[in-house]
Length: 468
Image (cartoon, rainbow, N blue to C red; front, side, top):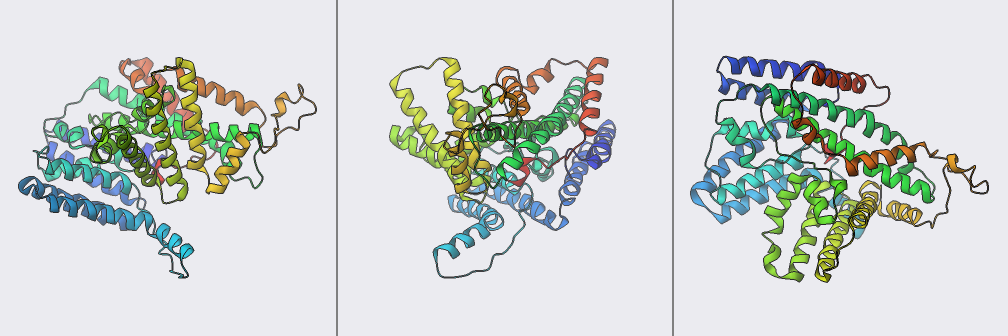
């Protein structure tokens, strides 16, 4: 069930919100929480009911494992718990990838398992690992299975984040939840804005970008840059839209989820980018990978290696392909270069630092989206002008001898320029939502965004991060 699907917008969400507040009005908070756990299982099972036991089993077993860790502080038990969770994730996500590479490196021909990746497994696996580590450290004190099951399965964040920590939701559930008109209004606004970003912007960009990445011929200069920048904008508005909708839906239940997206294309360096993009993943990688590897305590050189290893884990987490490995390594290389540059003490002008950061991120998006490493290299060649220089038809009049491109017409270039300006200069949706009041103007704005998004012609695809 997609957030942008009619069955979710018109049926599932209104019913769950209505029954939730009806139960809260009767002071049946416990029943309300169990009701949403059941709704989350229905939401998850809508995709494939066969994987509901996986989600329920993960929540149940890890809850009791965390409880045991808090009592025993056993490092062996912690290692066992982390390895079991990573093992399950590896089986579902990486088994066929490992078999393929084993077959290519050896004379054996092992049959693929053709495992279907369960939705959201990467997200809830990282969440339970964080819970186990925090329980071992004595940071978890509220052991309540109902609240834990709610925090794991809460459907707004279940499929594509944010990745929650113990302190993000559990304390909110331990007290009575009251209706807040301001929070509800902000939730409706974020839901509508996120839906608009997804359907009116990201899905429309995909109609241009997807044919470029699927083209059999090498892309010339303008097409290669349009494909790279276009995909950067597509995933920006797709993930930004999901993050807005997740936080917005949470607010409809008076549950505040952590900020997960904070105008990352306004970053002035690559470290700043990762503080703004997928913020809860960055927090997890920092707390549970980078710091245990030594972090800044291990010295400058080892700190760079720890950062590179952390970004490699982040790349592999996104998918079972060498392109994701390369994407993680590339960002690790960026982090290393950034730290070396800081040693020089030279500070770039803001506009140049921002442009350089955006250029590096855009180049990395190519390998993230590409079907293979060779495909990514071909597009990089095009961005460097090595595949020829074809210009959009709109400027062909200024250069009659220049062959016009066949996949873009110049209009996309203008649209992407406007969207890029917006990403790099305007406040994020959460900041805008906080300035809203529950009045007729807000209601009219929300209704307009909903109407335009739902009835916009064209395909409405799933969110990009759902595949991870």
